[in-house]
Length: 115
Length: 110
Image 1 (spheres, rainbow over the protein chains, first blue to last red):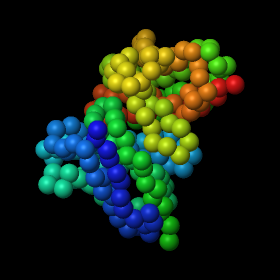
Image 2: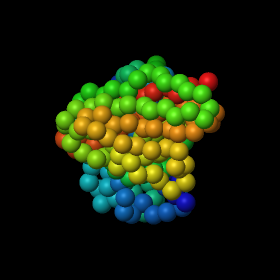
Image 3: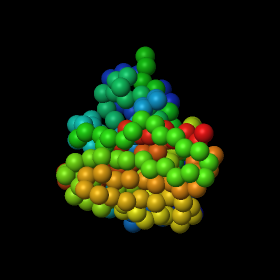
Image 4: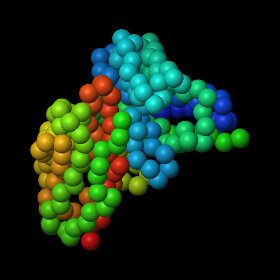
């Protein structure tokens, strides 16, 4: 069965760029939509955006100006880059498969924005 | 877009049934059958329980069921079990091709 695993720095400085990668195993990244979702500490879920394996993207309007999601089918990975981060971007970041429901999810990775 | 509205908490005793509501607008829940429900245990990733209002993924117990009326969707858990204690989130596709989540509901099994 397909599994997803997030990876990337756990600490990012304010104004810098948050970069995460999601590695897909047990299945091909070709076909399906691939999504990023985050959850601020003690808070609810927020949809960040998705990418189709062909490269088509759709972003949350509130993050669109700072966000890039890309895919590397040769590595079975997709990635998130969020520019000019602030403390408000501190969250557990999840990657997940499919749209507009998400199954399965990665285990999540905590990213803290702090100097 | 505004978050969907869920009750902050619900509770029930083992064996009972509970229902969690999820209220949106005519631009999301009311206009699309793309409502999903997720279960999240502490420190764990969310798990898909219901998609397309009332469909269950393979492996999800038939004690979990979903429905929708107008701008309000509902998740019903029957035969409540201790392991059902968790946070539950609804989500809906929107008219601007985005997705919105509910604020989450904490289910306590008494």
